Length: 145
Ligand code: AMP
Ligand code: ZN
Image (cartoon, rainbow, N blue to C red; front, side, top):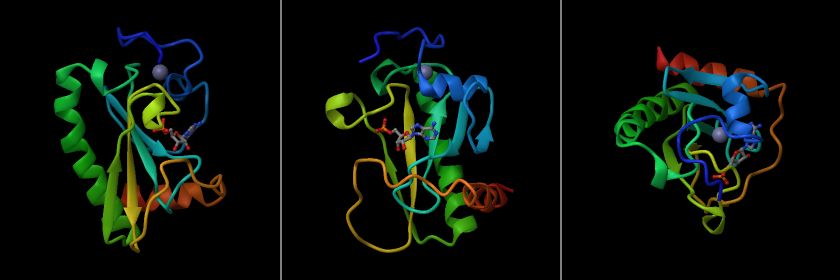
C-alpha cells in the first residue's frame, strides 16, 4: 500500500499523472476535487472511474469533506451514464488495498453501466478500443447536461 496520506501527488502514481496531464485520459468530468475519466480496460461499455485529484491511497485515508462529496457526484455521473448510454443499471465498485483487488493505490470509484445481468469480473477487462472511447465518453457527457 502506498503510505502517502497527505493528499500530495505521489511519485509514480498513474492517477496523479492523469490529474497533472502527464498521462492522457478521456475525461468526462472535472472540478477542484474530482476527476472522472474512461477506464482503459472496461468491464462493460462505458465503464469509467471517479477519482480524487489529490492522492489518497484508499477510502481509509480520505478526508470526510471529500467523502461527503463523492457519493452525490457518483449519483450525478451514474445518472448521466444511464441516460447517455441507454443502460438499465449501474454497479459502483470501490476496491481498497491490494488484497481487495486494488491495482491503483489512489482512491477511485468504478462506475459500471449495465445492460444485461451476469457476474462482473473484479479484474480489468480487455483493453478499450481507444478510437471508440471518446464517442462513448461524449454520450455520458451529453447525459450530464
Ligand atoms: P482497481 O483495481 O480498483 O485499482 O482499478 C484500477 C482501474 O484503473 C482498472 O480498471 C484499470 O483498467 C484502470 N486503469 C489503469 N490505468 C489506467 C489509465 N492509464 N487510464 C484509465 N484507466 C486506467
Ligand atoms: Zn495518486
